[in-house]
Image (cartoon, rainbow, N blue to C red; front, side, top):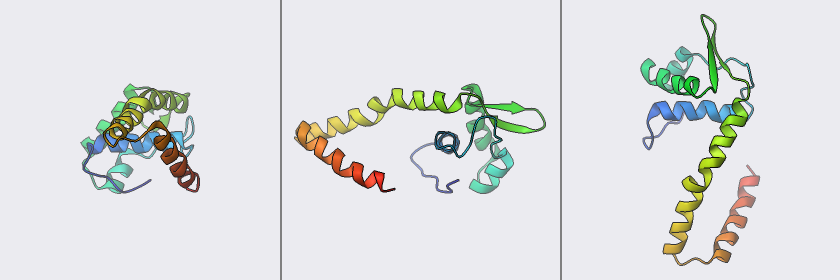
Length: 126
């Protein structure tokens, strides 16, 4: 888990996204228990209600499920569902703003592709 939270998004959304990232990156597998609300409260030093709000969103979306008295677990098919959700939002959230900025800067399609190819190499090194 990463401890860094920023001011750009509500904390409960960031906690939700951290858990989603752990599922997508195979750090949490189907039917594996996720950290408890109390563990997340202690780790991030935030209010219990804030953590619960992020967790409840994941439950509502069917990404995790609760076992009463035991804890919360990754739902079957959660990774596929998350990847699909993120793919659907990728163009609008990332590509469209990039293209708008490229237009303002008068970058050609070729220039944009060159930038992407250059940066792709640095991402693959991570």
